[in-house]
Amino acid sequence: MTETGLLENILNRLSSSGVAAALFGADEVADWPPGTLDLFVNSGLLRRAQPSHVIECRGCEEYCDMSVNIYPADGNRPAQAFIVCDKSQNIGRVRVEFSRLAQWQMTGELLAAVLVQLLEFNEPAKANGKHWNIGVIKGNTNNKSLVVLLVKDCFTLSLAGHTIALAEVLTIKKNALALDKAKLIRLVNNSVGNTETPEARRDRLAARIKEEKVKQTKAFNQVVAEEEGISVSRLKQILKPAKYAPASPFAALMSSTKPSQKKTKPKR
Image (cartoon, rainbow, N blue to C red; front, side, top):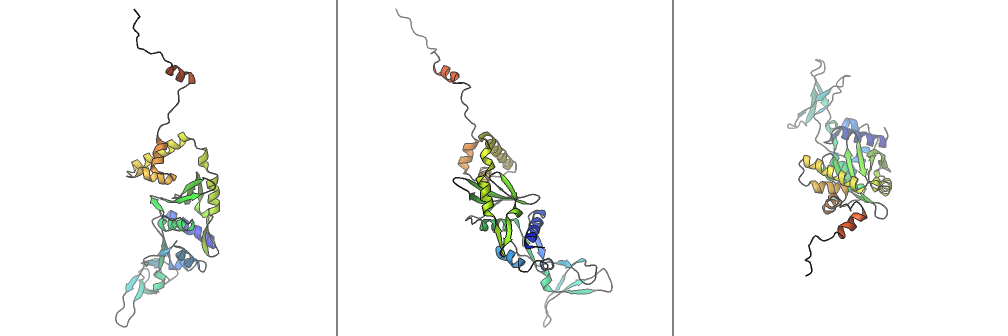
């Protein structure tokens, strides 16, 4: 497996896990391309997890997943790890090297933090359920958009009305993680949001606020404003109903020239 293929594989493992955590044991990591584990750890994508208590037994050709028993050091006897086989009377105890118990984990928070670093944002990502607000990326002139990391069937980035698979822009180049920032800027400069009418945007944001209210989110305005990359005050301005003009210019004219209802006294 290539490094890029491996990166896509571990991203899929995390998205399939419900983004709580994806674990990678020492036996699996040993088959990765040389240096890949160090690359992922040094970039912050993976971190050391608690040792595993269940591993593949190599006492026979069945390769069952078995619990590991730890025997602490006692006097001159060093600590040892064993699997006690209950499948066959001919095997008994199978010694396990402690190095095989090591494992590493990847979480949605770690992934979001890596993206913040690669995009050179100063503020940490803000989590909200299964999406993370990474930061606002600027394009040409006044174009800008909030970058949001989403997860459903796979990880995607949402920005400027576009949705793109994370695996399309997150790669490994020259033994380091790399994010195609230029491609993201092109998406910002060709924002789909530019074709959204004010009414459609107001309806969309109102629907998002309703979703957050249903979830009983306290700072629902703040959550939606951050998703949109705007302030709460600006959000409230957008949500105000439009003030419609009279149906025709004659209606306005007639309302301004309407005769007074006040009766005048007759001259004597």
